[in-house]
Image (cartoon, rainbow over all chains, first blue to last red; front, side, top):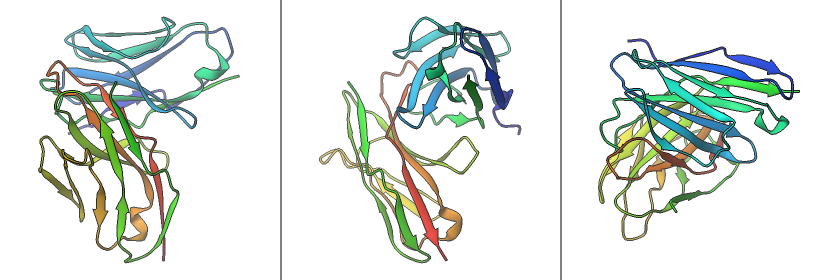
Length: 114
Length: 114
């Protein structure tokens, strides 16, 4: 069974640009969540999608957005990039039925903003 | 709001030593508790979980017991190996039954020396 796949693995972008990250969940999983991991702030929840609807949202500015497609694949977009957006972005998928269901994480996309 | 506190380390142990990583939480409602592990260059892997008070999660020699009275979920292993070197994250998922929203601790880096 394939795991959670994130593409690309590495990205270098310039301040002011925008970026789109992609996540393919485990087959059958309908919930996809996104997290930002930085040395200073640790792991922070961005948002969660279930059946193409955003169910939960963390405390991030509107420059961070996402969507989910009918096949459960998800994309995350960051517009007007800032240096502080440099981070490892992790995607997690789960069956999504209950909050006590474990999440399975991808390897992440390492974004560097210069 | 919900939060997780854990010893940040780094923790350095010799092979076959006993491991304890403390984790305490603050949450409303009835959260589920998790330990995730992150190896270098990888995403997070679920190590174990407990979904209600007094539950014990266990996996690969690691154990943790959900203690509601002390709001704790300490991770233990009787005999660590070099291959256990990684960063360990304690996390909770609040039980609103409407989806995934993990709150992570800052992570504890463990180094096991041969």
